[in-house]
Amino acid sequence: MDLNYTREEQAFRTEVRQWLKETLPHDLREKVRLGKRLAKADVELWHSLLNARGWLAPNWPRAYGGCEWNAVQRHIFEEEACLAHAPRSLPFGLSMLAPVLLAFGSEDQRQRFLPRILNGQDWWCQGYSEPGAGSDLAAVKTRAVRDGDHYVVNGQKTWTTLGQHANWIFCLVRTDPDAKKQEGISFLLIDMETPGVTVRPIVLIDGEPEVNEVFFDNVRVPAENLVGEENKGWTYAKYLLTHERTNIAGVGFSNALLTTLKHVAARVNSGGRPLAQNPHFAARIAQAEIDLMAMATTNLRVVSAAANGQAPGAESSMLKVKGTVIRQELTSLLRRAMGPDALPFQPDFLDGCSNAAALGPDHAAAAAPSYFNMRKLSIFGGSNEVQRTIITKAILGL
Image (cartoon, rainbow, N blue to C red):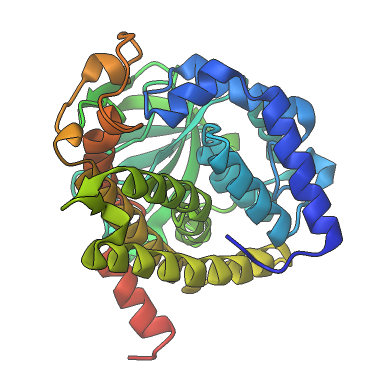
């Protein structure tokens, strides 16, 4: 996306582009480019390469191993990484838990957990949603009862992304059942290897076991794993969600997807001419690009404010809504552009078990699964309907 960059910012882009060219393994690049599923080892490899370069935690303070990049640097890196078909850095430890620990955790917790996130010792997942508490997150019922130096946790979490790989989970738990919903919640860090923790996968419509149910049966958690104060977890939860929703916007991913869409639309013929010359289809691409440019500008403002110590507010809800709408539109257009080539649904190809080339234009084998998977974007992280309510109340005052 063409913005006005300074000479220093252009030099930074060149540095990032060259590093990606030299460092990103070809087979990993091809997996991402063709929409194949990444194994845990793939994610860990990319994580280790970024960490070795010192670029894993762009928004952390340098004192804790971060880059302290400004908003433009972060935007440039995400854009170049997506265009180079690099894997996504896992957000759960890096950009969700870490900001909470930096803002509300104890120094002991920061010294204990932050280095382990950087060196890959810990893979975190998020224990927020429950069968009866999704968009109404304050309705969580998972209980944590204080017993001496421990909390005893019982309950269930659901839609836990990549929980099958995680060894730690940050959880919202109810520590005061008699208080108002938001006032009786605490923020607890739980070792998933503790006896009583059970993980059960949920297979999504694209065939991917991406999310899970997590059950807690008399799980004993050291009280030192409580973040901040007991019954103040709702404050920390909201703080984390603003960072999560900003991340969901996915400007870099949408830019890369837009590039692919334009490439495909120029190659595929419709009515004897390239699809890109079809007025209706071209108009939809143009509208998506205009929306993306506007969202990128807003994203820079929000990320810049966060870098200056301001927690993202209702603007993160705006980014979440608009970002998910754009990504869903782009995957829909890509699937439409490929026509019959998007019909095959090849689990073996996606899992990397098949050497067959993608049918038709690049990405054809993954077009339908990607389209289906992106349906979730408008639901998780707080449904778009709920985010619109937040916007009307917090910004419009309605």
